[in-house]
Structure formats: C-alpha cells, structure tokens
Image 1 (cartoon, rainbow, N blue to C red):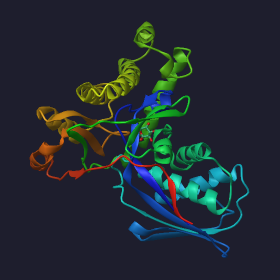
Image 2 (image 1 turned 30 degrees about the horizontal axis):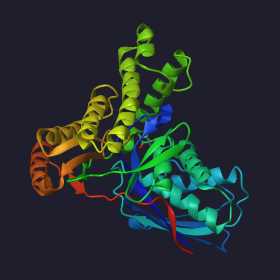
Image 3 (image 1 turned 90 degrees about the vertical axis):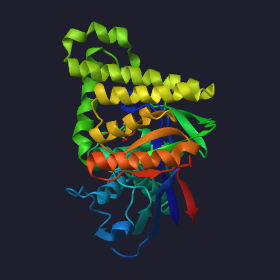
Length: 362
Ligand code: GLA
C-alpha cells in the first residue's frame, strides 16, 4: 500500500500548542509518499529514497539510533505502536517526498504520520486517526528528543482541502475555515537556514512555560492572562516574563485572527501576523537575522499585508500574505537584497491548502 502525508504551514499561533492554546495551521500540497508491505524475511528494511539510504533491523529489537536522523522517526513509531499492539511481523518500507527539510514545513510529522497510517493498515492495528496523531507526537518526544506540541502531527493528519484549521490544542478539536484570500495569496520564503540544531532551545522554552504555569498554579499558560502574570513578575526573570507574556498575547492573537478571517478582514489578519513576528523576535527569542530581514523586507512593501517567521524558529521559512500581481517583482527584489546581505540565496514556494493523510492505493 502507499500513503500520502502532507507538510503544513502555520498562519498564526506559534509556541502556543504545548501551552494548551490555539493554533491556525493548514496542510499543504507538499508531502511524503510512503509505501509499505509485509516481509517474509526475519528483518525489516526501510529506505529513504531521496537520500539513497537504507537501514535494516529486526522488529523485535527497536531502539533509538544516536544521531539516527530519519531512521529514528520510523523506529520511534514502531516503539510507540508496540506499547499497545503485538507487532511481530517484519516489513519493507520506502519513502520519498518534496518537502524541503529544515524549512519548518513539518517533513518530520509527515513522515511519522505516513508510517503509522501505513502500518495501521498493513497490520490491521485498529488505531483511529487521533490515536495515530498521538503516536507520531510521542515518537518525536521519545526517539527524536523534541518535546513538540500537537500542531504538526494533527494538521498533517486532519488537514482539509482549501481550508485552514482553528485548532484548540487542549480539546484537540478543530474548526475548518475557508479563507477568502481575495487578490492576495500565500508566499513562503525559505531563508535556507536549517533549524535542525534548535531542539534544545525548543525544549528549554517549553520548560520555562511549564515552570511559570506551576508558579501560577494553573495547568497550562492557556489558563492565565496578563494581569495574573504581572502579579508574579518579581518572582521570575525578565526574560522568562517576556516569554510567558508572548505566549499569552500570541494565544489571544490566534483567536482574533480567526475572527478576522470569519469577517474577511485580511488587513487585520495580516497585521496580527506582523505582531506575531515581533513577539517571536523580541519576546520569545526564536528568530534569527535572516528571518528578521525577510520580514523587514515584507513590511517595507505596501503589497505584503502580513508576514512572520513560521514554525519552531531559528531558520526555515517566513509566511507572507502578498498581492498576487506584485509577487514577481517582490521576489526579484528580495532575492537580490538577500543575496547582497547574506551572500546566500533564499527560495520561494507557492503552496495550496490540502487534505490531510490519506491512502493512495492498496
Ligand atoms: C514545532 C513543533 C510544534 C510547535 C511549533 C511552534 O513545529 O513541532 O508542535 O510547537 O514548533 O509553534
């Protein structure tokens, strides 16, 4: 059988998911195709076609590989499945995709979801989609070491064609919304700075949020507001204060952004994206010079009504809401100025909002 799992973009709601808050992502028409079949061998074979890499192992011995890269996503899924299911038959798996890696477009969530979805079918494991989303997330926690939230895996599994998802990360429930982009469209700009080394910075921030939530005697930062936070201001460092303040404000922005979309107010929506970037840069400290430069260029142009860095941070893409007819000229200008400033090139992608994980053929 073969499965398609998409990557994702995120309009707004960054670092809010692991605070039980709201996010506004969408699955895209770039993803991973994974093919799986049972094997009669006493070992399993997994192949990363794009990298021309192969790995074999026995299903009875699943453990993480130090610096194992793509292998750990697959092994992590197997490890999580085996916690509740008896998986003793070996299999062959091959995957390939068109999501640029390290671009903040969740190629890892796409890989995880395609693998768990495929194994679920091949071995009749009986997991529902929501259970598979959590298996993917735990694989990332336990085998890859990133204590990620639920946004990427959820979106890659449950995305809807032409729609964004307003996801409540506590209830794990989403409202799908069709965005009327009018004369605008989405343009992604990849800084081509790889964000791979950011897992410790990510986990550190998650810990700060949890520590302050504990101090506030709440379950998660979703349960507080700026007033409550100001009451413990002298008990935490000013950098931690800024980080928590960012999360509270970003969570509010997501709710405002959802309303703006419902009212078809794209200018307000775009303004919130710029504010989100400001917070990610100055308060949450997860941006970098290249991303800031790209957002500055966007802000200088009257044709880009909103832009911000996207995903965990420290590299990857910015998302821009730009007037369609002005895109070519803007791209040229940015390409030149980026090259001049950093001596490297940035890349541009157009994406469509697409359906989540599905079976291609059986
Ligand atoms: C990564 C994580 C997500 C989310 C974002 C930041 O993509 O996998 O769970 O926390 O960073 O919003």
